[in-house]
Length: 69
Figure 1: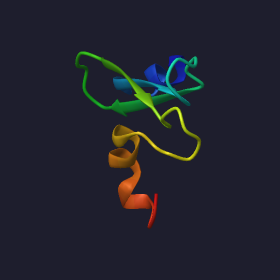
Figure 2: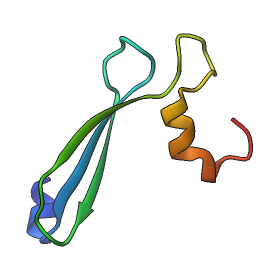
Figure 3: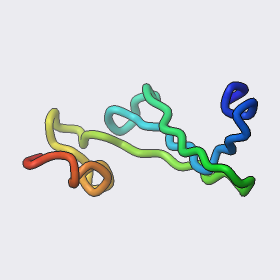
């Protein structure tokens, strides 16, 4: 974040990604831009309780990058 600030970038969004429900977040997704505004903070769960069954929110996020989920 310090390096982004040095480049005059501002954090727009911070998403804490959890591998499955109840697990600690293991990824942090950040969106930056060139003007200052309020940071939106949210969470994203990748899989449901079952392995390789992805949550609706994760599927919606990555659908343009995968042929089949």
